[in-house]
Amino acid sequence: MIISLRCKECRNTLSGAKDEYLFLCSYCKTLYILKEKNFYKIESFIPKNDSEYNILLPFLIMHSGIEYLHFATDRQKEVSIKCGNSPVIAVRAFSMIDPLYFGDLETELTLKLSRSEFPLVLYTPQEKNFTMNIKPEVLERLARYTFMKYFDMQGDITGMEYSFRTESSAILFLRGKTSGNRLILQDVKQELPLSALLST
Amino acid sequence: MYLRTKTAKCPECGAAIKMSNTDEITSCSHCQTPVLIKIENHLPSYIMEPSFGTKDTTSILLSKLRHYLIAGDFIPKSRIVSRTLYYIPFIYTTGFRCGEHIIEEKDRLTQEKTEDTRVIKSAFKTLIPAVKLSGWGTMNIGTDHILNNRNRLRPAGEKSEGEGIMLRPDISSVPKDEINLHFMTHNENIKTEIITENCIIVYYPVIRVVLKYRKNIYHYSIDAVSGSIIYGIAPEAENNRFIPMAAAAFFTALFTGGIGKFLLTSFVGGIILMPVYTLPVFGTFVFLLITFIYMAWIFYRNYGEIVIEREKVEINKLNIPETTFIEKILRPVFKIIEDSIISYRKKNL
Image (cartoon, rainbow over all chains, first blue to last red):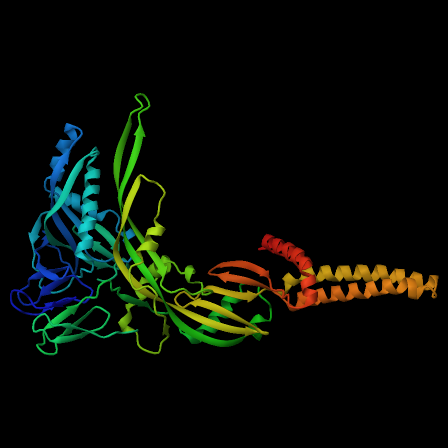
């Protein structure tokens, strides 16, 4: 497929690499996600944090909704509605050469976002200092299982039938800084080996 | 790289744009619009930088071989025929195995069956050779070798020409069937799907060294990153030939001694009967003597081989030819001796 790298707003050139799926207009700072054969405008957020950073790690966050629920007990219904009404699911959107380093950060991040443990602020990247190199379609499939696992973690939610749908999606940038061979993710207080990332 | 040129229409002006079989960012030659070309199922290629060149291979190989029980004159007498750097393509895949595990439980008191569903979401990584090379030891290169040296990975386009031979991968897309086979389970209650997150082609550097020793050719695959021998066969040490030679010498001495004594006494007993009585015995003596000398010579000339794979050493079978008529007759004898030698060596390894 062949896609024009012109911004739909200002007709300026979009910056990004050939293996990427997230592009930035360097003039009007609009962020685009490449899905199937088209560019779609996408909002970006960042946790409210005043500390300095030099690396941005993109996560795809999706607001989901439950279309149909069938519960076995009242307790299940109560818990499910509480955590399943408006969960925000986060899946990483950067490639890692060793996925085992990552652990359960996605589920933890989903929990933190759902509990509003750190507030998000609208963020406009000023330069292309991030890389998203996983197909958004793959991320959406991963989000489905992250959502199911998130439900599992709430406990006692079994034997439940539901239909999951994505209402909206956005990009969340987690800030990181390097310290030796480690990449410290400040917002979630976790560390990754820098070399675990395929590209930074 | 094998490039095929195709054309596509510019999304802005409709002019023809040349495109290769890889993802790229280019611009329309007519309206100068920058365009992104994405090829369906295209896998990005990375190349792993070798940590040493082909010139250093000889010293590294010989220093490694010294640690093994190889023939003493192998290192000084072997001659290097060729040293070539190859980049072997592998498909490195990371992803997730996602699905559900239905756990069936039975209540002890009521005997009621209940079902509990658990979500499975585990990450995986696999390395599958993208070319079939027998006798290269490609299966000895695992994901750890890629992960431990990941700082040496570079995009394949940055490689300059003339540094080695890049083998063309036979697989051009994600090997879904092979990955599925890897995670296949017979548990009917586990229903999972494989989500491929990242799939890249990694060209791993392997130096192929060909040595000539006596009249035989030996091939070695050297890991050009770590310097270890991935796969190779070497002639084993002479010490291992001692047992069959000693056995042959023992039987030779036994027969020559016994028959010699008999001949001596029969010679004294009567010269007249010698053509009738002694000559067949003498003939048997000569035949057995030649046979045992021949066996000893065969064991001296032909040596066993050891197979070196990474740090593991395995004994190959004795390299005894069966080309002549006598060797074919002696096959059962060789088999018995070979089995006893191999079992002896395995105890001493």
